[in-house]
Image (cartoon, rainbow, N blue to C red; front, side, top):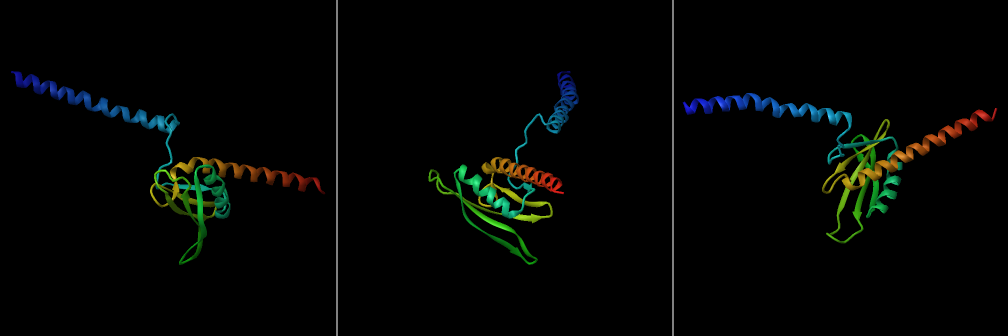
Length: 158
């Protein structure tokens, strides 16, 4: 008698508990889609930029200096098809915890360039992603304003 009551309670718990546990997943998915939970850019993700690799290197130079890093070297990245983008190697300027070195490439694409976020030794360091994106978006905004001003001046001349 006692085993049947136990089995009945267990079966009831599984029937009711299973859907209750899995029902929370759609709520989490909905809040992510709406933007209520912030998703950070993680290592291995590509960052697409609307600037050329050369401009990205200049922006990176400004950003790293403000965040305890320095550009150790820059160069062209080639493969079998030719020039692919700009290579960069970064080093920390702080000595606490040892020097850290990371390297990556701003690959050329039709709308600008992209790079990969890194975690250990390759890619753009995760702590530089947010300030770099803010600076590159600001650069794109400045360029668009300059283009609008040039168009206004061109219209005024005739």
